[in-house]
Length: 542
Image 1 (cartoon, rainbow, N blue to C red):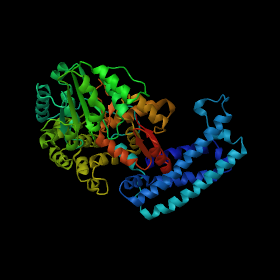
Image 2: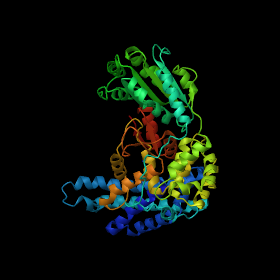
Image 3: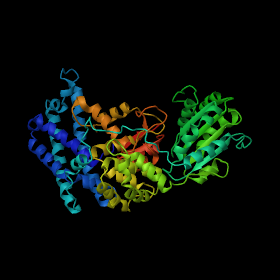
Image 4: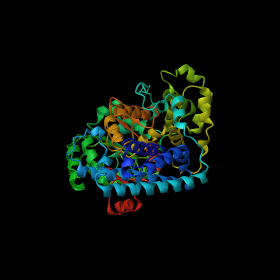
């Protein structure tokens, strides 16, 4: 699993502290080495926040961070080894699970103790070398950065009483333009006598990532006239590497058909979708299309052959070539960036809270408009920036600090990554970064309840605290991500317990984990082999 360096070091440090507390070092004869390792990790931790920050853009730092992470993975492997040995010997133990320490079982076998002791000593030598190398990078001591950041901006680590969001209906819909666009698209879709594609009219919304294509499509999809006109309404979110059978299976479920067995072939799924749509006037939205195959090779045949006349398809895409490939009617609907006043309204909606009222926000409008200009008036960028400013607070100096932050001028990131998401990431405490990166691995095609996400975070060891508080801490972390607009409530549900991550945000998060994790849609032998060769985690996505 991809790890945030600072959070990872805390995890390993806690593990070593537990070894020392249980006296395992003395029993293994390596207590001095364990103490040294703890000291080295504490010294390293003083500048790990700076190393994590520079790891994004500095290739030489990336290599050093990789060495340190591999050393810490070795430390966790030692614990895993002990766990396995203990399971072999301790299945009949009556010890309470909360007090279970597998290393105590290992000492009953001298060969196990010798192996573990030897590996700890070797690991300590690697940390010595890594620590010596760190001097060449002139890292800044940011050891107190996280505590300072949390105290200054109201983030106390996992504090259950902390205000989270409170006003989850902060609208992303501002200005008259989106209302005008919605009316125009609905009128176009409802218009008779314009069918193409053998009876199916395809309409395309085109625009750059994060500009509001999905928001506009959702407005159209939920319009009263659309809801009343079509007996079958299907919403499908597609990604770059979609699975044909996975897309068909979701289309069947969205259309009200029966769930299909996982082993179903494409032909049988086509037949099932045809049976579900037969004689039904259907409205299909295919959101975030990167390749015209999703329509031409997967979904087109069932709709053209069996859906009722007058069925419609709405496609959102970043690429005019895709709109052309699906034979959408011309002209395509292009989404423009927000005008400054609408962008300001959107920012204001995100920042206002019980602690920062609207009247006070207006006193910061001059700075806000300059920040909006740096965001390019892109809706997703403005929303994420709203999350940053909301957490920073309502003081003028806080907004000025964001406006003049040197991270705006970062030049060593790929052009297709959003710098506002990078800025938000940099302002996050390390424990939240870990949860954020993990969330980006959850597949777009499935919905996850907050409790499911929190359970995954706990199982990965990302949440630290007393056993009774872990779930509450995890919920707080989840709400912090919502508050920062890094995950957004899924409009398909009536509450905030189901969220989604925008593709612009997801792309940045997965870029951050590119050297440690591989996300695939359908694992084949080549991908699996490459993953094994690179020694990275495999996260298969349905």
